[in-house]
Image 1 (spheres, one colour):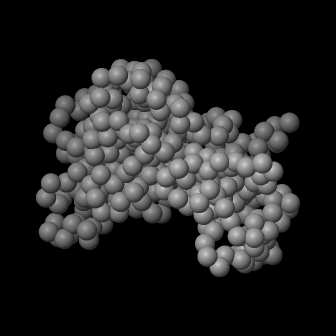
Image 2 (tube, one colour):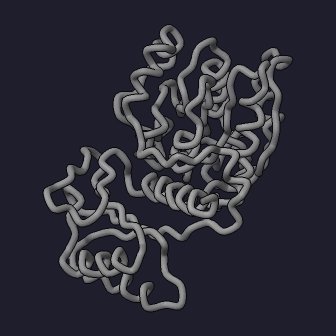
Image 3 (cartoon, helix red, strand yellow):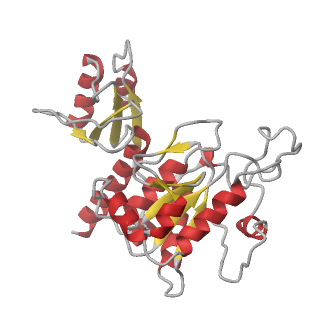
Length: 307
């Protein structure tokens, strides 16, 4: 959304994070007196990391704490937008709206999609009522818990469980909030302000099941000087995994690491089975589960140190 193409006719060859938040708002050509802009970071979202997230959470909390602030809009690159969305969704469940949006076209190409997405995000964030943490993109409102990038080229690049058209969402924000609240993530018990105490982030690794998966990568990391404190396994089908991968992850869990099981499938939810060895995260894709597990590990560490 803040990208700029040296040659506007070659819009896919652009430099990310060239414009500021103020630039984006000014480009809308609308009344701006009610909009306050702040730049938390200006990076290509493929480079998103925990320090930037930590700063973002702190600033979102700051603005939500202001009595005269109706809502917050976060502009974001599309590559890791869904991961930031689940981070914010897990931490913020108050009575104000946080909207995350982005764009698929650079800002200076013919017919960019960024201005419309930002205008829609501002409309939702500024509307009376609450919709929690949501993503607004290509005229649709997506629950942060299930939004994911489903197309690497199309303008409607994001999908989710039961998205809502923007105009319908604006007509009934209470119903939207109740609808999206049903897509709950595992509770981690971590107040946003507690992130300021975190100096070292837990290492949560993501591993996929696939044909000829023997768990060698997991074993190699377990034998290294440091190994992950958490693992998310993107299983095949209903979260299934090969015998070799299951054995390696069982070893990791017995060594004190947390292991969460999800699926590499784009649709459907993993169902827990009798005698399940690992925790099942039925409503999260692997990328979102990795973020939530990291937050859960942070919460456990902070809670244990406070005892």
